[in-house]
Image 1 (cartoon, rainbow, N blue to C red):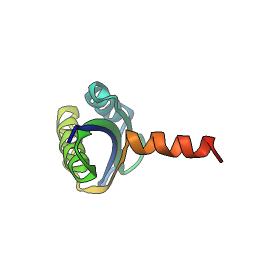
Image 2 (cartoon, rainbow, N blue to C red; image 1 turned 90 degrees about the horizontal axis):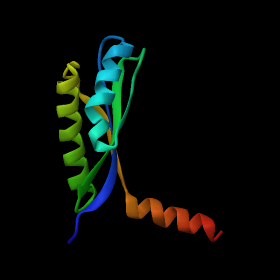
Image 3 (tube, rainbow, N blue to C red; image 1 turned 45 degrees about the horizontal axis):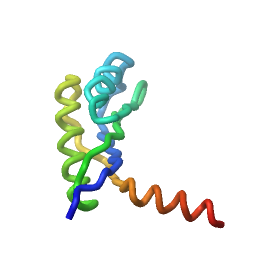
Amino acid sequence: MNDLRWSVSVCADGDRELTLDEIVELADAVATMEGVASGIGTHSYAAQIVVTAVDRGDALERGRAAFREAARTAGLPDWPVAHAEAIGEHEEIAAADLENYQ
């Protein structure tokens, strides 16, 4: 089976407020994965990145690993992942096609 493109969103929660500089570092770390980062002024940091994988489970595994590596690169605390989800590009296309026909 061919790998598909998946958009994976991952969020880690912690015990202190994050700064603009910290989230900018995370944004830089996920940029090569077509990623965006969030969390300025909150007690969590998050990213949405694109990975290739054969299925949702594989996408979540790869996305979590990439998120952890990006957080380490950005110098962020190793907080537990509170939420992760993945949506396949094929699912987004199918949903858009369905909307166009309704």
